Length: 286
Ligand SMILES: O=C(O)CCC(=O)C(=O)O
Image 1 (tube, rainbow, N blue to C red):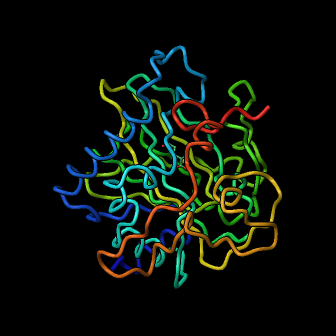
Image 2: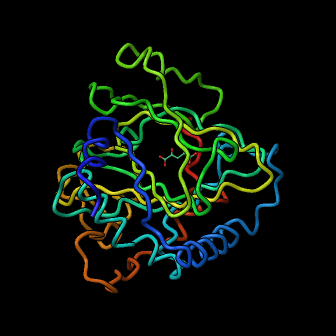
């Protein structure tokens, strides 16, 4: 169980690093599984880093890996991690919004500051991400930075990080101006959690190896679709505005019995990947 002190830190700061959630053998096994999945999704993309869009230079993004890579399922539905997430956010049951690998190549640029929640058509704010660095993360490889308390100030701003030339101004917003971001290294086996409204960013990768990260995004069971704008997590299962976001695309992650993994959804993934760019990142919003 996560300590009361860490829960308090998460609720106050909007982020926390929880140690010892993954054993060494799990890091090896899951690291290899996510590597294979990222390689598989990107096998037709032969562009060099400098040929990619600035968004893609921040990281290679591969969403919903649990659907077409069964060996990733035990990581995405890792009970210790999802139980920790439910305790941090303080709800009895959590669903998966989606998983994704975020691999920052050697030489990859910083990740622009943003909040996650404005990308999701959901008003309920019991949302959080488990950010799982498969080698740990350091200032050199591209660790995350967070604006402490930014989830509590009423800020809810869409930052178009997909479109690189748009100046990112969220740090200048009067609600958080002057609060310094805190950059946090994550030791091997630990997981960093951030709230869906926490302003966060990441450093560039100045090392010679990729920064290998897998993430799981969770939301509270019972949340509803409240916005008409598109997102595959609600559009693929045909969930309408006002309806509960509940389908086999967004299954319950906690509570679940040990060894009980959900089956991938009975809806094709290919059209979604075709809409996205080659690597499975969201296309630029025009
Ligand atoms: O890994 C990164 O560089 C950014 C991650 C992020 O923005 C997120 O997980 O919400």
